Structures are given as structure tokens and as C-alpha cells.
Image 1 (cartoon, one colour):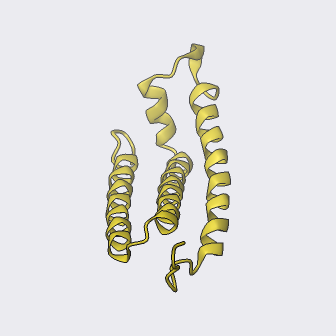
Image 2: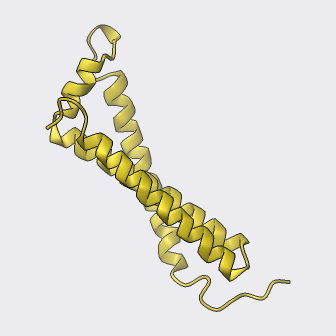
Length: 123
């Protein structure tokens, strides 16, 4: 039906495997994030701005949030690139879409990192 182009699937096994690894890391970081926000350290069941800012002053929590950001962006980018390779046959369109995705991913990474490290009260 479709003629496969050489090189379209190169590196596919690594990307497929790493997609599963990042998915598992996302589940773990999401559960930690949820637990911390809703059960850990919230006085009287309330989550306030002050408790969140106090938590984010700890470098460990900022690192966990940064890990969550990086892994989520990579997981989303990798998943979309795999779908593009599977369904877009025109090489020029494929390159344009993947390039656009990389630009968007880098912008999200920059904005997310700046947000994590430039919060008021966070050193």
C-alpha cells in the first residue's frame, strides 16, 4: 500500500522503550505531586499560597517539579514525533511538523523553568 522510506523508523526501538520509561516516571512524579499538594503538610485541609511557597523554597521540591516538567515535555514530544513518523508520509511536512514541535517544546521548557526558579520567595 505505502512504500516505506529508508530511515523513517531508525531509532524506533529506543524511542518506544524510552516512551514507556518516561510514562512510568510521569506516573510516579504525578503521584508524588498529588500527594504533596493534597495530603502532606496542608494544615486544616487547606492548601494556601504560603504553604506552597514554603514548599518550593526547598531545592528538593523544585528539582522534583523540574523533573516533572522535563519528563512531561519529552514524553509528549516523543509521542507526537512517533505519531508523525507513523502517519505523515510526506518528508517535507514531517520535517516541518517535527521542527515546529521542537520549537514549541523548547519554549515550554524555558517558560516552565523560569516559572519554577523565579517564584516569589524562592531563592
